[in-house]
Length: 399
Image 1: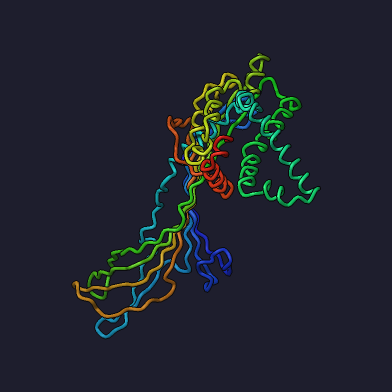
Image 2: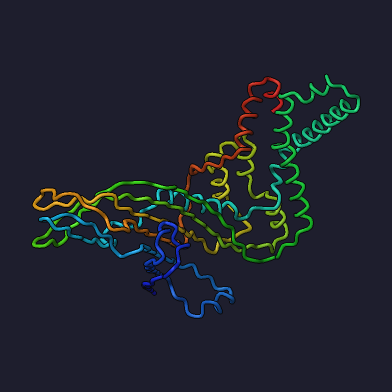
């Protein structure tokens, strides 16, 4: 069913919702909502009974705010000062496509697919790194003992040796990539032993990715024809546009979990069904590649998941865009000859905003990784420490 709803409303004495026009106390406000959706009879009752509905949806909400419906400029013509008005609706105020939204949809879907069947413990990686885990615990304990002994004996020479820049760098890397994963593994083992699981249920895995285009400024000329005292006149209206855009893509995967077979359940909970993902994690510095490209998630998304049967998938997008138009100059022409200067009658600005929402059922999963930058202060520090360690021969042998 297609639903169209238009509403025009004047809001008096409300300046707080309109920061672009703080000097005006009476604002004109127009909102229109266009929506396409599928109407399902007895939707809630059928959903409670277990029926799945995966329908498309499109919605566009447009809001227009300005102190007046039009702006006016004055010019001298044959010794007389005449005024002319231009409706704001005549200006180009279309919704602009968002660059990068398709990539955001791919990344969100890949993340949701990768989260399907994400077990409590990745036992394959845990067993492969067990020797390094024991070594990390032993070396950390011996280092702590040496530091404690140096502090107890007030041995500043030994303390400086244990707390040198190289040792601090190695301690930082041991904590980030040694002790911290051990803590997560121990917590996962605890959850595996304590947490209860239903034999059969449905689970929804989700993914999300945002796109921030920021603010874009532009200057354009709008050709405007209007009726003068005796003939059709032509004006060139120069206006500045300030456009802000933010977008978000969300994906979801609804799966049926089959835990009837106890043996398969244990294997899935332990992560034995993900050998390709475990192999990728064991490649040296593969985690650094995942900071720039979602290789690991792409492998997880395409890897078979014997415990899960996909029932439905979808991707939703939400785009918020605002556009402020400000008139800066009007050149009036009569028979292509300039007819003097002009002045404005405020207001010379208007704002348009859009909220676009869409729902795409059963989207296609991308077969190759996408560029997905995931850097923060900690990861930048990690890269510096790892690069410094690789330059040091002892650290290279150690790592």
